[in-house]
Image (cartoon, rainbow, N blue to C red; front, side, top):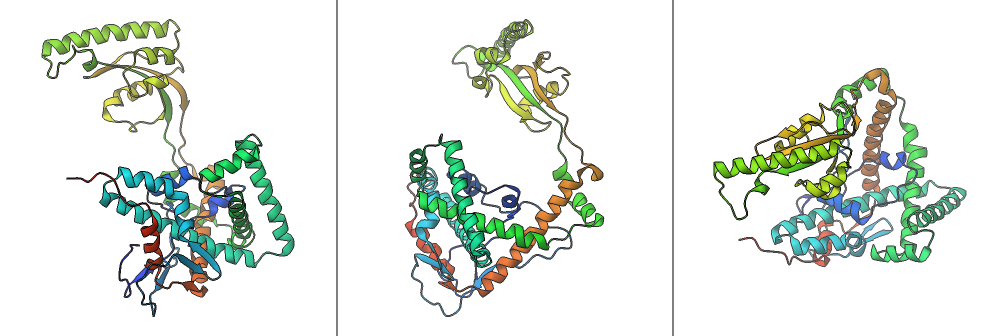
Length: 411
């Protein structure tokens, strides 16, 4: 969806449906925080990465057709039935991120990022509004009271867990996030209402899968179910180039050979210290030239093929080791010597149809639920009274109110 000046003859995309099963799998979705929004916008907000089930017809992409709404002026409020989505509601959670990007990105790149961020936020808010309206209309008074109490409990739990039970600290954190306690409580309450309704209505419409349907899921998603062997790597890297004389840009063969011998001698000294029982992390901090030296040489989990070619020989040695916490032999490459130690081993998982039935059933239900939600929101949108009819007018109001580019201009 792009913000066009004159889209009167085109359809303007309003919404993009997400898989809400992640909400159902958790007790209550606490919502998007600034960090989560940043990661989502950086990857262009893909709401569902799973493939749809085979032979499942998905609903058409939601759109609104421009009709007699001929004005071009920006509109600061999008009204969906009786609910209002304001420019401030769209921008507030991402304002800090947009300000940062407006100063660091070249103007053309920032403009593209801004439009993606705006469109993603509007899609999310419009979708959530439609689902909330439908969910709230099915609740009885007693259910609403229970949900109000649950929302208070959820906020109280967050205060206790993240802010040591101090309400004032929590409220200050909300102000930093650009919201208030009242707004946060309303957001949690709305999410609980939607989750409660989806769990008790839409989810019940999904029949248990047959064996053939599960086999189809298994074949279609076998690669994503496979978990390759991995190991937690600790690595000390001794760079040959860093042991050349200072200010040597084009070293001779003799200089390189001298540096290699010096590096080998130092590597043997380091390995001897490790074998004698010295702590790998402390030795790495003292000697390693690698990117994780300050972290004690800890690389975390790695798999074969997951690192750049420079470090592949080290990973090869890692997977040859049979003992945890014991350094391997020196690994020599053209540029460096490596000392590798394995901190933990995960043998991985090769999916076997009969042994992963629960996960296959869950994936089947996830996919079915995503389709039902998409179809539902299409139906809700068809019945909804949405103003302005040309959504680009609202989008342009948001773009105009957002931080404007002040970043570097590329030549």
